[in-house]
Image 1 (cartoon, rainbow, N blue to C red):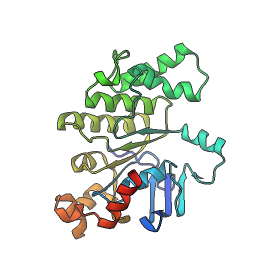
Image 2 (cartoon, one colour):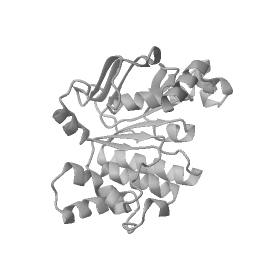
Image 3 (cartoon, one colour):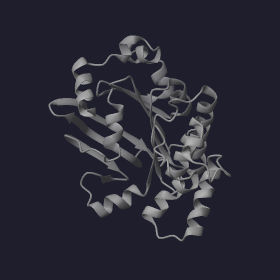
Image 4 (cartoon, helix red, strand yellow):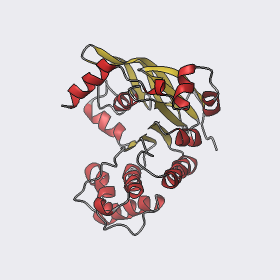
Length: 269
């Protein structure tokens, strides 16, 4: 069920966002808003710019131009102390889970509490176990990441993202590498988080089934530009040939500019 509140109450506001690596532009003046209580899915083919957009939303990279505001604050103009305080209102579930291999599940979930609070050990354990129960990992305290299935790793990472009780939650390819049954379970969990806790959620994904199940609104990116933002059914029936190519998994939706691909390889090395 959609729980989007007043559209004027934006939690995420992106205006004129330009991202570039050297002379190569990746994002070309991106604009969109995410309302409080909304699940927004950002999707696009390979090379569309969605990963770059997510890094800018998280404040991991500075834009060449434009602004990113979270909770009304320009994240690239905040003093470091204010930025850290704002980040405590945000949770992130990374694509690979990003769990610490040497820590148990419970220790991984407790990690943000150790870093950002002065709570005593007992309280931190109680809070971490509460979030593990939310994601159906109760009783798995002492397992290491290497002992978890792919779906369990995703859920452990989600418990860690939730442990600080965020108001805004980002997911990076939450269904990547999961079988259809586990992916569907994760979709249900995302919906439940929004419906029960009122969390605003932004999901970056290329998984179409998941996108059309969980989204209130979908933003479609293509080569650094927004092709469309709208309700999921409006996107599903859009006339734009590039959107239909993406939805029907035709090769043209997955084309990557050769120069961009080479530059991405250079940055990785």
